[in-house]
Length: 301
Image (tube, rainbow, N blue to C red):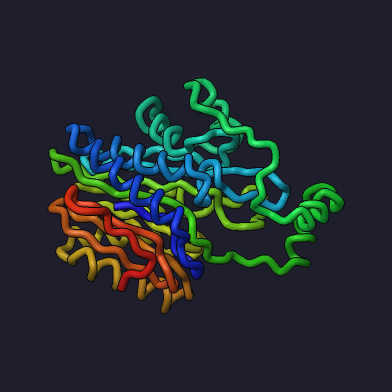
């Protein structure tokens, strides 16, 4: 399963096609006998490369005009996980997250050190001159406002609040050995303060995977997802015997009633049962069983 974000906007035809291609890619990886981690990474790479989603080359700019990205990946047999936050100039942040998991004893690397880490492993860079995710008018206002204090004043003056965008990406998978994995990649939310980190790179919040319960990849407003550690709570409910649909519904309802959060979730059990649920008007997501065409929609209930 894979998603391209939860929000208010309908997905485009190009996004639908790209998501279907990503699902086929991930399924074919599993068909070759590769791990669920490999399938999750390769699925997300397709979405990061497309420029159609708020991830990888399509990531939004922060308020200072810089593109910073977050990603994470986790596998459910040993509970290994890796993540990066605030990484720059990397085409595939999800690949950097996997390298953190497999090449270090750490879980999360942030900022410029994360970027240097990716360069050390020669990950493909992405140094686009000036992406069009923020209006020139807003960037000119920011550039005229000067350093941090004025940037913060501009943020306040614009009354920027976390908004639900359709375009963060993620995937979950289970392989032949029964090991589940989950991952996610994002450019954050539009016009966010430099340094802001959402749920995506935080294990237990944006992603979680445990063979004893299942795998979850979240999307939505990260501030709410973080406060309830949503991915881990859904997996815990799976482990306690809830179905994917019930676990997702209970936790997302809690998110709405307790803190008025907005989110969507991919939920996968080790036996292959799954659910796609969202509290937002739309969620771009889908699955493929290997027969027929991939199922891709932007509304699930």
